[in-house]
Image 1 (cartoon, rainbow, N blue to C red):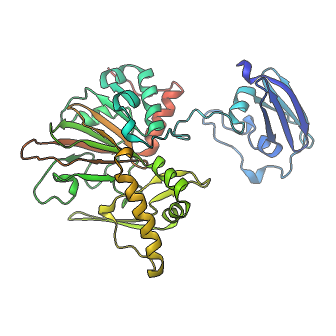
Image 2: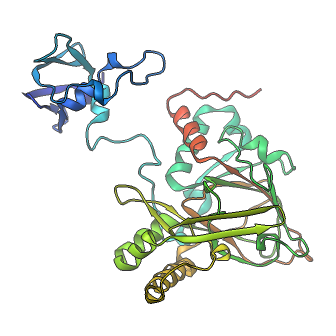
Length: 383
């Protein structure tokens, strides 16, 4: 047991226990919360709870609380069965305790132009990541924290992308298939398949669910133009909240219709441009002006919404908010499609062909792989 998880003193009341840790921090645990988390009420194999709230006493009362053998031991007034809570586990559940999950507290980067991509974001050679669990753990953790990470030396072949992402997450198949090719074609059904520059956006907000993470693998790059652009949507949304709370609030509560039509697909979904958690934290940015359908908004409300929409759009155009980086052949970038907006500069495919291959990864699978790597239970093995 870590010395910081030692308890110095206990104050016991019928409805709660307050403990003072060796660090001087004080934590309070409600009797009902303790009763709901009895270790013996969970299956030993799966860890899943064997009871639900209807099985618990409404007001469990604590008779005594003591520390014994590295555990907080509780005796109840109405029950003969005592309870024991491991101190290290209990410290991890305390309000304000550090959380090991980087996705819970992402590291914002508002001023993208000040970012040195090679220095400030996670990079790893594919072979090193496949061979070393520690490399995978650090890389995945930084991907969740920053919302973006890079691999180098990924074979620039059609099959290279799927082989490279097998340890990062599960590929989500769409109407494009498992992978899609970003290169210029005649009469493109999507502007991504043209030479045009693309403003910052998130992909596929017309899908349900919206793709979680996007992967782009550089098979052929242009020496002139075709630079990749990235920006932190969480940081931009928080900046809007700080500078114009009314505009921010409008963008969080106004449903926006997104539509995509092609010969083989018609996709439609409504969601706000900025999505919040129950606690009011930004959890997603959905911005793709190319696929917004006509808004269903009252005439008297239009000016306010369009004003907020325009203000957010202008933030995306400021170069100081943008990371500008030209991928080299064999580079692969993974980014959070709910957070990181991406775009590119214009190029000429007739002069310099450009070919990226992409895919989407499910959000939960990427987070699962990061959690497995953190706890040393990496399921992937490589020859």
